[in-house]
Length: 382
Image 1 (cartoon, rainbow, N blue to C red):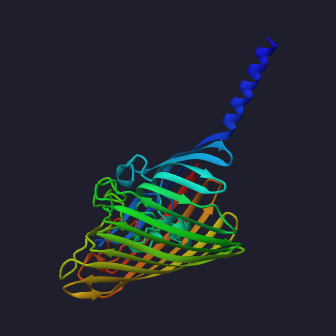
Image 2 (tube, rainbow, N blue to C red):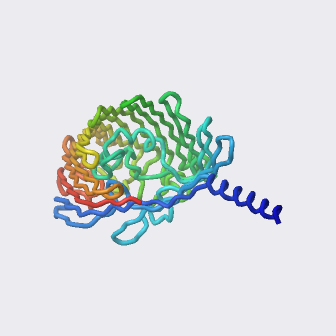
Image 3 (cartoon, rainbow, N blue to C red):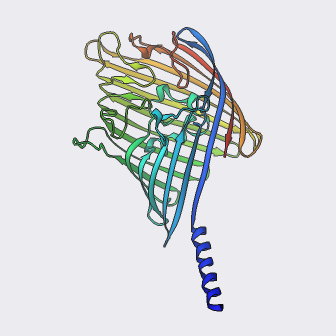
């Protein structure tokens, strides 16, 4: 009898230990608010919109301790619209993230699946939209993907450990095509953190994004621009002193032979098709934490675009975007916020849809070079 009790006790201890070494977490965000847009095709729009500061989502993530500082890990995350119940990211069940991998305390982590690229992982944190403000504060058309308009499929990602404040990583996304380079993606980035200082930089290249149905970037209605080649690079800095955080970010997006944008459809300026489309974004942002529960943030972005046409030459529309936001936490999981974004488009007139204002998240493009969106919302995290 005593031997049986001993065996049962040992098994119970082992089971408890195994349980302690593994974990699975259910989590989510529900972000719902009321939006007013002053000009959508010449009309005012009042509407409920889901998921602007953070996309509404639910997910599962977990780890298993494999011993020796090694862990298995996974994450699957669904994005949805709370107003309709529809799935976002082109209707994918786990369109936000879906990956599995291993991590080591000494060597970093390798993960496989649908994931974020290095522009999102590193550069985005130095922008207002990629850190605290969300969609409305994105650079025009989210051209640099710092608000993760697209994720990358078939992706192998490496993330290093942190060495004296320095961390780096990269992604490679397979085309899953007989043409190895057709709709593939690769990116890399790095950051350095020292006290209140953060420096970050990244580079991304995608070949023929959305050219195939099963490649790195698919035409699911969530890519920013479609062309034969997409290149995004940039760098930024954040500095926090007591309750104040200030930042500057620069990004450069280059689209060869652009065809369309998921935001505005076909790009057909007067004189014919473009051979190249380029955006340069210059952003300054600041946030002040008045109390532990309340902060106010602001940002300004100047964007210079270059539209290259073999028939009409280059033209240069420019975009100026201003954003202001206040956020108040009524508990650890629930907050109320109000934010507004205003955009003005000037410079050269090209005769294309890119001449008019469009704030990402608005119901549609303006009929003029100006657009204003104001949002009041509640967010709950679990």
